[in-house]
Image (cartoon, rainbow, N blue to C red; front, top):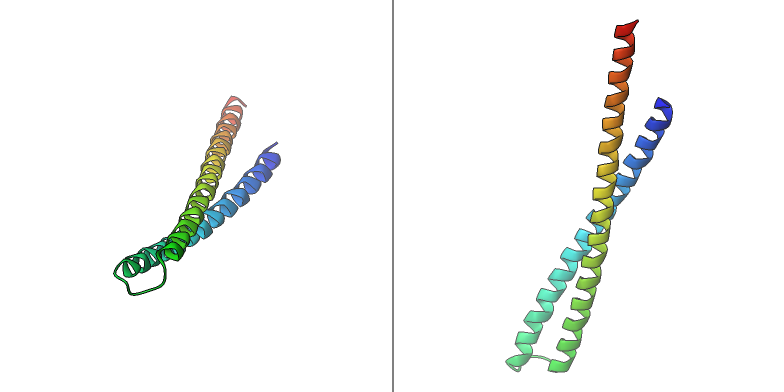
Length: 111
């Protein structure tokens, strides 16, 4: 039973690491998209002062950046929820392992 619990703990640990890696990747993508959005806003301002191409192109770029940003936020939230769920599962397994230790100690005391 302990071996089965340990296997489950290893599996949940792998899932948590995978979720953390995914969350890190999504955070990096989010940061990149925020930089792009900032650049689009600067370009938009330049267009308003008559220094660049058409305002419609900038608006389209900003809309695209916003859509990408919203997509990344949604994916990040999902990954973070998975990470929290995995952490909660690991805590449950850790508590279970503590209980098993207590049970074995109590059994040893009775003998």
